[in-house]
Image 1: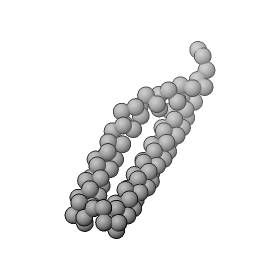
Image 2 (image 1 turned 120 degrees about the vertical axis):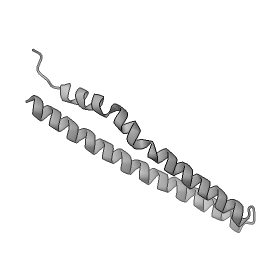
Image 3 (image 1 turned 180 degrees about the horizontal axis):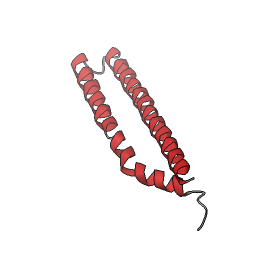
Image 4 (image 1 turned 45 degrees about the vertical axis):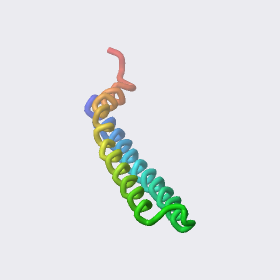
Length: 94
């Protein structure tokens, strides 16, 4: 039974980790698209020049990538503890 609980806990946590990664990707793409749209509107309104807009968008893109690279570490830092806790739930008391 312990093996089944631990195997199930690993699967559930892996699914949660995958969902977190995809959710983060979608959120970052949406944020970048919003930043891109805002910058294009400013450029077309003459509030900024092309070089400044491109520089800002490139820096924002790099920031999103740097932040996204931390997601696996954030997930991994607590993964083992979450699996152990999940496997412990429902265990009969000896």
